[in-house]
Image 1 (cartoon, rainbow, N blue to C red):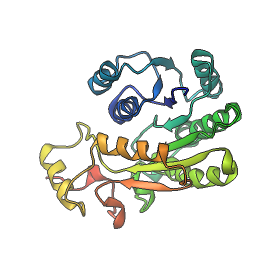
Image 2 (cartoon, rainbow, N blue to C red):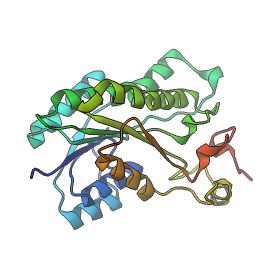
Image 3 (tube, rainbow, N blue to C red):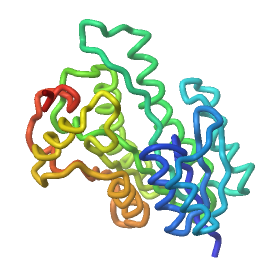
Image 4 (tube, helix red, strand yellow):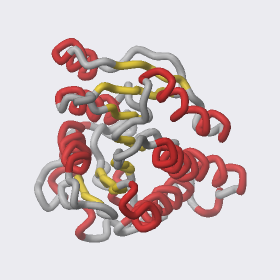
Length: 254
């Protein structure tokens, strides 16, 4: 039996590295995309050493449509076959509310967070081998259930990718399965204090924030859930169940 192959965009760092590590342990060979050459996070290095999973790194600027179009063919050239799984994890993030929204800023956000995932999905299905039905998992955001006014271009792009998940599931039909995972706050940046993170965790219905490994669990399950398409799993401690009003970074501050 041919080893399964997964293409993970933004797969060397943060949540992407956790997803790639889990997929290595699930028996996948890995095509790991990154915007620029970089060393993978320790969690991924450990998983690759433990499993011996075959892996190749691919550098591509997903803000460039030509680079997006070239990525799946490059993976096929390297591995001799199309991936069985595409995880659209790479994302562009930017602060800003509607007053500062510009056409170039919105276009850049939509290119990387919507156009690139959709076009990669198209390329994967177009290049799938005979009898191959690939799985596609889009990483969106829990805010799609209850939009907030913060990071407006990012929020719009993730909402669009969320809707694209169901639309592509219908469009591809039996040719591919398309699902999404919607994380909540997972790896806080330096913008958060330790006390704020604790308060935010306490606000969640489950009393805790999700971990990268838990997001990876959801991706791995969707990858093998052969009867599931067009669905979104919220991995957010329950944050999507009620409106928060603002982005996490603005909540629970001192």
